[in-house]
Image (tube, rainbow, N blue to C red):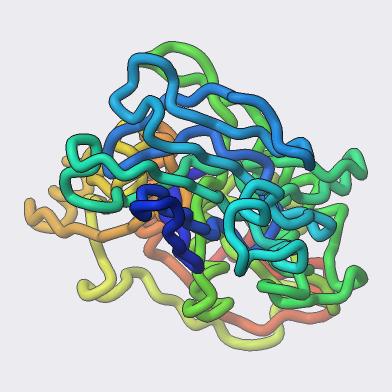
Length: 360
């Protein structure tokens, strides 16, 4: 769920004095669940239904008492593959025919009534708060709107229009279902007191970005990573998994290369960055800076920032937890590499493993 501007793909004037401006604004290249708010410039426009057209699409008009009352009409098409052309637009615009269905594209048809007092700067910038894609849930076999990152990433991997078009056999649904359950776990928050889901995804992307960048932005919402192992995709969110394998001296088949500190170029002891805040009309803003006096002391009392942006997260509480995860991960500086015997085949990328080595 996020705010989008869309793309104006059609505009036409009608009326004896061209007083009506008809605009088509596409908001997504797929079916969406709903449009929950409409904005003219930075003003939210409360709407009410004035009835449906012949195809059952609701005509929304500014609510009584709003400055745009009687000066606008909005119709939302959610982008189903079987959707038909807008009946009102077909009847009022000769160039728009029943063949102009925009199947698989979510769009808004907006008709503005010219009024220099209401629109002193011309056509307003029209944006929408949108509940986005309906995604498949392997846990229930249902397809519905969801903010669950595991389900949204799964959809992107499989989608043949805008995603990676992976085969269904390449998706490890046991893993994705388990991660989806993790994302749905309740986390206690304060101010206001209550709970929220551990991880959620609320954002949008354009296809001028590479799939790698799109996936990295999605994965930022779980502070995790995506792996491809044994012919299948799996997600590793930032949650602790109790190790089931221990590797010790009898399993090692090489020397140990040990690194006790990361380079200062990669080291940081504080975190800052941006996220999208719904109460700020989804504009990017700074989340609270995270600092740690212990880590600063370890770094000669010098504050060193790492910058992490969370473009797919809209909760201030979640963003602060994600930032803390990134800071704590960065302070785990000891690492080593070695070769092991076939005992290590029990492990997969990203697994937590116990290491026992008496010398070290």
